[in-house]
Length: 458
Image (cartoon, rainbow, N blue to C red; front, side, top):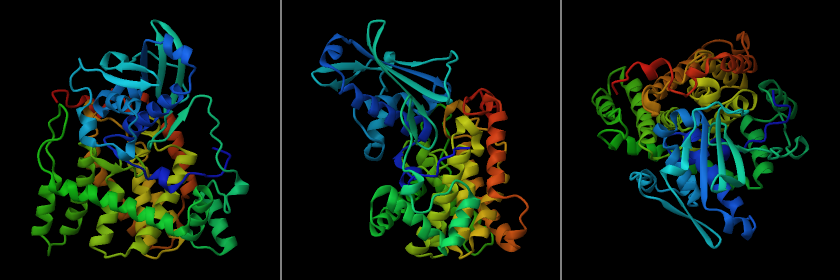
């Protein structure tokens, strides 16, 4: 377990950017942008000698990077694009012609970068993380400047040798590493969950409560725009699978069955599929906590807003509960499919969604913990085995299933006495980490086993 307190911002966990994958699209784009900034700090003598920029992908980035659009994201980052401001149509247009190169401007130099400069390496590479990308400024076969980055899930990146220490415990008013510690802080200081989380967020960002609340509202707006776009857009998703969008059809069915007891679930499925299909199409989504799992929270929050008629204040409270669970998983296990399999993505999103629903309903922290624990418990061991490396099958439907499990976890946690729950959230996160460690690499976002091999005709 990480021995430092949790210092993740809610706006790092929930990030706006293009699909289809936070670890394979947003992370590499951010890494490429960072490398570009560091290139610009290099001595002119080195830049004059160089003749190319080479990019080498390893692990899951290599295995499924093509299907996830990693190569396009890398070029975009080297061109100076940022995830939150990227035009998804322009991103999808990159590298369509393998003969086209793109000018990367560094000082007085311009380097042409294209398909030939991005290498999907199949050889084993010693690295502390499954998703590794190495950038090299080269003169022929000679490396003049090099940086190595790790995409660790949810669009988070680390640079080799970088000091990752954030705020210290002394700088955060209510430090915690586990749910047990979080609950102790709440009880000792007589705080609500949203009060504690907001105080820590203000210390981390330096922003006012009003500004933070406004930014959370904006995140929800981005999520709900993705749902609405997905409910409108019909047709076939990009890629060789030729998968047809299902959300608009489900939505119309739900509207036609408005008086049926099944309509509630059909609406929820439609909302989750809508956001997930937008992600698969490379549209703008919100990592929640990853792009591959970006349908669960948007679907549930859209349902809460339009069916339960929760106001903005209630939705914000729920978002803090979801963030608390996401922080705990990221800190003590991982939200990366390449590290944990799909339990790290959909499992975490489902637990976050269960916490969101429970806290929105006015339930205490014990019930929030129980709901999140149930959400993770019933995703343990779930593989990440996307067909063709695309975030489509089984990923899109898996978002809808994760949301339904979140709702059921909420019901189970609030039907009895939460204190009677035998397994704690901290315990199940430890189990999650151990399960991910023991899981074969074939089942962790490499498309080398499982469903990925069940439909090769795609």
